[in-house]
Length: 487
Image 1 (cartoon, one colour):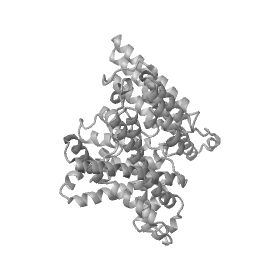
Image 2 (tube, helix red, strand yellow):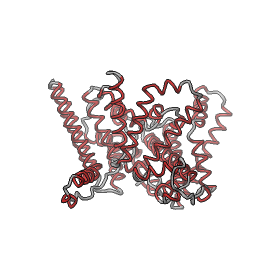
Image 3 (cartoon, one colour):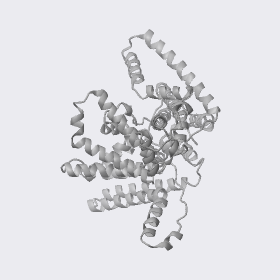
Image 4 (cartoon, helix red, strand yellow):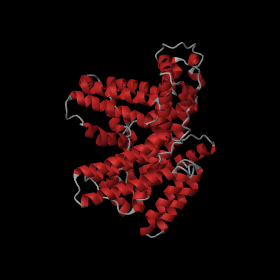
């Protein structure tokens, strides 16, 4: 089930909200947990078993760690418990997400060494449970925070299960840390203003996904996956990667907006996951603005434990490269994701080694051009089906391909796509956020009532219009799943 499906919008969500507010407060977590498990198992009933194993094991590890600490166990004993928990979680992740890929790589290596008989050994396809990377990282953060005394143990198994399985952010984040929602799980109140803000945020995210990301996805997918390499012209190659950049941002940030909005309707306040990443002037700044919950997770649970920047420049560069290599691999079991992570790791090392200081002397537009050039180039590696495809695609982008140029922009750039790209570029900039900030400031100060009321009415009408447009687009059956579902 996805947020932009008619089943979710017109059946699941209304029933879930109704039950949540009808039942007594002490049963609301039970309702939400049942709804979350139903949501997750809707398309993959077998995959819910993997998540239940993760919930049960991490709940047990949390209680074990807390019990050992109460008995004043040694720090070595506590680290052993954390180590077992880490191995269990990463074991589940590797088994279901990377086992097939690792097996294929091992078969290739063995065959190259002359062990031809190994090519007959087959592991069998292991299905990827949707969202396993996200709920695994949440579980790991819970265990590590308990060890660091940065959070309290959850003694109620149903409440812990709700933390892992809460349906708004279950499938594609943001990655929520237990300490940020512990009090909200225990007690929360939904007021009218918060509910209205949740609806507004959800509709904006829905519009991002359906009206911009999905429209840009069609040409991006066709150009990357279908156009023959000898027909890919420079202009079409650049159009494809720009469409993908808009699709990726509005697809993922749209999901985050919907997750934050839905959570707000149920009384949860999740942290922001995006802060206008395409206005960045460096890759370093980009990772402070893009998928914040993931980059901060790697910072706090991998980069800092490795030593961070405390042990000199060589160690710092090694840690940065390692973190982003693993960050790339986190996105999927394929060499192009590994290459994407390595590229960003190398660029971050170069920026930290002195390029950032040098760029401070550049005009701001030139810094932004550097960023856009770098990020779009790396997106080709991220999106292309294989590394070989990314090489030929980049060659076409920079005019070094063997293309006969049979593909032209006119085949793709119709009015609908032009409008989607224009809205995507405008929506990537924070001018709407400035208007919203002015509106909230006016409300807090109690000034500009006429202007505020006019804005309020205009916003309501705009959201209603947005909902109508989304409904029309959904009814046209232009469906595409969220990109990050496969991660």
